[in-house]
Length: 498
Length: 100
Image (cartoon, rainbow over all chains, first blue to last red; front, side):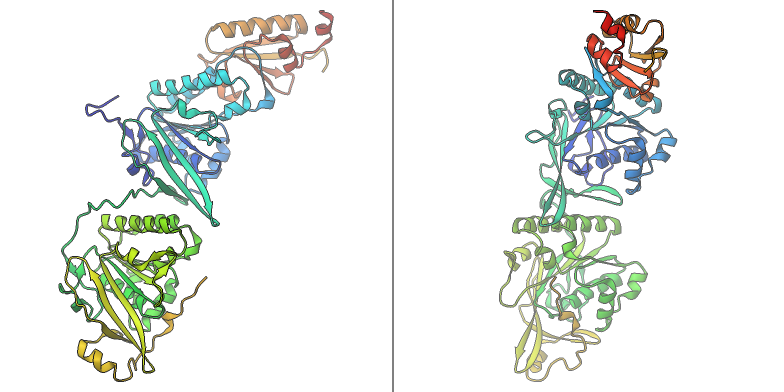
């Protein structure tokens, strides 16, 4: 079974993200143990492994269930878009429900589980199965009393599965001190995966960890995963690898006058830009410019709006002369709105990841990223931001984040503005000053990696025709007279705290 | 249950293993002693008919299934504990008491 380079062959699971962190899937022709507490997603992961095997790799599968009947199982996974009946009718899938009911069974004397072996063998041979799931074999222990026999028979079963050459997934319920109640991990020595389901501050997060994977490198972190209408997806980002390729192509910000502040006349493609400022400093407008300009280049933009609904955003931007509507129609722009408090941090990241994978944008905007920062602990936020940046760099996506902060304190939840800004390439600060009864908008570039930039603080005005950045001279003049006469837009500043 | 009822047992085995042979000997012995002639013992070898295992929910070998009278009862193992087998199959007829 070993290949020349001493790497175990693998069977792809077909589950988004999981194949990446396992380096290609589960060990081929060997059993993999998936353990976790009740409701952690073991069964769904297992069944998805079978279904993907059938639909994507043409490998028929047997699902031996010890807990749910074929009918219940079919019904339960229908909501995930899995049509088991169809696959069964095509003879690609076989579900065998092994009912172990203690009240119906008496034990006397010696026995073995040969009946189970025969059933499994028959099921495998009847459809030429390459993949097998046993869910959850430990149920045998609640139905039968002779644990000595059960243990030796389960050991024999795992050996038998190997000899049969099927790639098997065995699920096990999490024990108090052991990974599984009956210590199945002792018998499955090749690959053990632990699923976890935690609720922190009313927000549920699912996590997956590879406890062991013999003969293979694998990520050792806990990876958040999501179960939604498409089944399981795992977030595979490990750490900031800094191996991504970079671009030297210069693209325009789209804001008249802003490009000139960069020595190169724009910023690098694939750059990440942070726009910070207090409420009402026109951060969203700047973001909309970035979005618009990407659309004009015929490049897809994914806009995550955590404070405004798509319609609200479109209407508000129209009031400053930015018309996003045509690009929504032409599907160049996708605005995705959700409340930050709806999910945990990891779930947000995962959802971002999913949308990015599906929409394949060239540019993404997160407006504002500070809303995400308020929902996690310090460590979590750092890790999440690093992962997010890594993901964007890997996909060479140009990004812009806005971040709300007070003028006085630059802290939110223990994360300083600097902490975020160290992860981004370009940092633009926008602010409002009150001088002589007037409010003057200004912006400046704090940093811009890889290119020189102006150190001037430029005043700008927002009119119904958009942002106008003043040159240095007129900036000075502007401060002597009433600014922003033409400004009609002011609604964006109202921040709603939940 | 009345004495006129017929008893029907299915013994599931997988080849002629010592455990299975012992189980068949035991159930034959108990039936002879307590059920007179009103019984049938059917031996099903799953090596020959594996598809039958699913219908009766067989996973252990040997398994004795009481098909009649209803309800269905199952005993797994070589049936060496006579008291347990008789109790499990609900054979606690007068004959069982008279034997002593």
